[in-house]
Structures are given as structure tokens and as C-alpha cells.
Length: 246
Image (cartoon, rainbow, N blue to C red; front, side, top):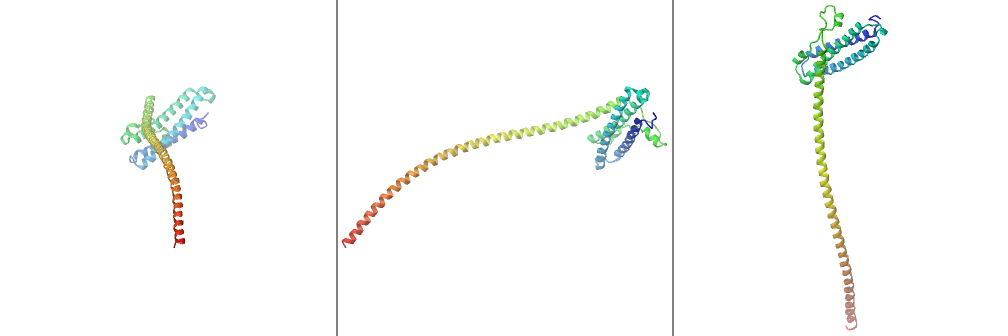
């Protein structure tokens, strides 16, 4: 199968174009002022593109693994398989280096760190596009790739630790507020119980007073009737005397 018809080379060219575009965006990112809005935008764009390219490289490596089970079925040999594996490894390292540089710079700042972390070789695909460019990829061993991935993982772990610390502090604050609310509820419950006891005592006293008042009213009513009868008798006597003896 020719390179033009091989799906691997079709996908490879697409990924290489994406890597070339990524490198161009990275060089533009290096030139913008640190902490500017433009740098923030480019940082998000670079990280998003890195994840997209890494996913494409993962899928391509899966396809290579499938082809490696029976190379003759796909019309390729071991040398071609090694060549393809080498290319995916180089592509992954390129993307990983850019991702690490952007991530580290975003977390710690400083333009000098960009140069220290990145030693980007020029793309062979770019040489095919522009005949006047010189140079080729520098040989990159697996130790560099492992170191790059390790640094990235350490940064992610540090960020997760900081987030967990913040979450732990929030939980402690919520727990403290919960205990305060619990104590306040207990205090309010005690006040309500005391108020209920006082209301019950007051109610009993009112009942007692009402009974006393009722008794007094009954006594006052009987005396009033007697006084009225005596008054009428006296009045009758006075009228009788005035009528018959004057």
C-alpha cells in the first residue's frame, strides 16, 4: 500500500499539521507579555489543542498496536512499525513539552522558565512545506519524555493538594458553624421550656384568682339584695307616715 493510500499517513499528516499550528501558537504565546489577557487566551487555546492532539496520537498508537499483531495483513513490516512508533513518540514529546511549558509558566509565571523548559526541534513536515528551511528533529530519548510527564503529574498533584486543603478548611468551617447552630438550638429549647413552665404557673394562678373573684361577686350580690330590701322597707315606712300622719 502506498503512503498516499495508507490511512496512517493521512492521519499522520493531519496531526503534523496540528502540531505545526500548535508550535506557531506557542511561539506567539512566548512573545506576548506575561499576565496579559492575550496570554491567558492563548494559554487556554494551547492547552485545549494539546489535549486534542494527544487524543489523536493515542488513537493512532492504538491503530499501530492492532497492526503489530499481524503486520502482513496490513502490508507493512517491522521496520515500518518501528518508524511509526518513533513518529508517535516524537509527536507526543513535542506536545508534552509545550503543554508542560505552558502549565508551569501559568502556575509560577516568568518568561525565563519557558526557555529553560522548551528545546523544540523544527518539524520535518515543515521542511517539506518550506524548502529553504534547514535542520531536522533532534534525537529525544524516553528519559526526557518520562521526565516531562513526571513534572506535569507533580504539578497536577500539587494543584489537587491545594484544592483538597481548601476543601478541608471549608468543611471545618461548616462543622464549626454546625456546632454553633446546635448549641444555639439547645439554648433556645431551654428558654422555650422555661417559658412553658412559667406560662403554666401563671395559668394556674389566673384560675385561682378567677375563682376568688367569682366567690366575691356572689357574696357581693347577696349583700346587695339584702340592702335593697331594707331600703325599700324604710322607704315604705317613711311614705306611710307622711301620708297618714300629716
